[in-house]
Image (cartoon, rainbow, N blue to C red):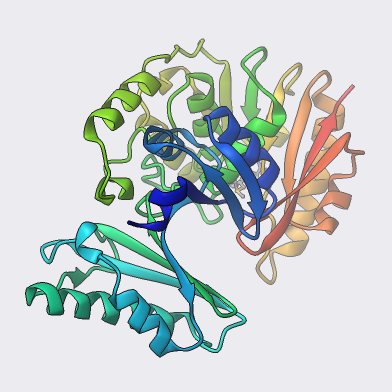
Length: 379
Ligand SMILES: C[S@@+](CC[C@H](N)C(=O)[O-])C[C@H]1O[C@@H](n2cnc3c(N)ncnc32)[C@H](O)[C@@H]1O
């Protein structure tokens, strides 16, 4: 019996800074005993609940089902313990698999080496038991195995999401610095927007904020386009319960009133990417997208404004990004009265450049970059 079958406990990975938001979301999705820990949250749920979290969560990056935890003082201990696990309950020689490892404060110093040992253990287990082994497919495996080694303790898990959940499936085209879908969803959630007034992204890029706001408003599950989930490999996977749960989550959709969500961008390619991405989501015809420099907009009054101006992380781009942030701050102050803006800033300098006193600020990480989401009330 695998570890998750004994205690019904799973682990949700989230971007740093989103833990409290994700706790609330997991509880809304029926999770019990939600506890925040390093890089994510532990929670308990039944099988249908695990499917629901994977299908509906907008903030969680990945859900792991722990298979086994064991002491791991050396790579040999890792190999021996892993080889003894009942892998045939998850995999067959006809399927493909991949291993992702993360090692910290351990005698095994390289994550890639740990991943390789676990891969060998799985392959040798199959050779012992059936003379054939499943192949590795690092890009698109049927089964993702996750290994975490912290100090002298290893946890081997199945990735029940089958790759990061931020890959919703609607992003066909991109821009140089697209916002991650889970972060865009967090911005929508933090804004508290429920459709009571227009939502506008005047620097919409490839349209991630618009897409996430649309799915939130129309109650479309975040993973509605996803075809494969890792939980289907679990030995207790219940197809009927998954299909029933999916039908239930798909049912309460609603239409978007024309123009309630709109965006613009000065870049022709960004606007084309945004339109193409939105077309991937049924019902988005009512989302208005135009090519426009925000400096040429008449203003945005009485709206919720959500955006991430360019951070200018690369050398040579910083000054331009700060100058743009200054102009954007002026635009908000002078032409957006009655609106509430949520502006994601990639540095403290950028916060200063926007130059408006935030009513609140939230810290969230875009990969390794510490960002601040400013809530600005414009009177
Ligand atoms: C960091 S990107 C936004 C990414 C977007 N959230 C996404 O998910 O793809 C910033 C965007 O601001 C746009 N931009 C830069 N200067 C602008 C201006 N003056 N007016 C309108 N858009 C501008 C860029 O073209 C770029 O698409």
